[in-house]
Length: 297
Image (cartoon, rainbow, N blue to C red; front, side, top):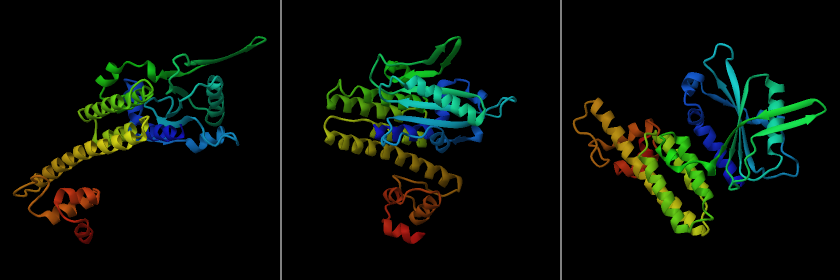
């Protein structure tokens, strides 16, 4: 469970703009996405510290500062919980988060509960308390992964939708044989590569799928990671070749790249290094050894 927590935390940060667009179709009008986001995880830990005897929290909590396009409020707070197990006190905890965040920041808050568990009967949506004429009612946004429609998620070009689809597939592992799960996940990875998604986001979602999935046979995990790595690498390499070809043409080089090799191989390798490409990839494309590439720098 702790392993999944780490993956969700990374996915929410890597895909947070996609998260907003996924839940708010008019996100680009509501939020000033160009200003970026500030993740207030440390502040949230101070507001709601983990119990001393709880060394492995089984939920993900994020607090994000988001700038808006409104003239009334320059920024707001978005609180996100990813819940992976049944907890009868979940709604109360959501309410506790709310009033502690409000007390500290006094800013508008919207909250999301994403349920990544397999219990169809667990779906709390509000917290309510009533005593002698004093009443509290706190409702929050909820999203139950196992209840989502596969076709709708697959039709989306939003990277967060593909992450949700990956998580939903992982929840079905107890219903499927390892080979069935492997084939479904591999086909999902191939469909991901056909989406109109940037290479960086594709890499992020692919990593989420690779490590979130869990097979009965541990050997299948290693096999799946290896196959996905090969599939991803092939896609990235093609992207680099196209990128280098475009740069070569712009600079008027007589002949561009053919099968990853340019006339002036060392010059190409040096340009790739300056662009931040991994040395192993440069070696694979140019045919130079890693030692030769290191000497160029």
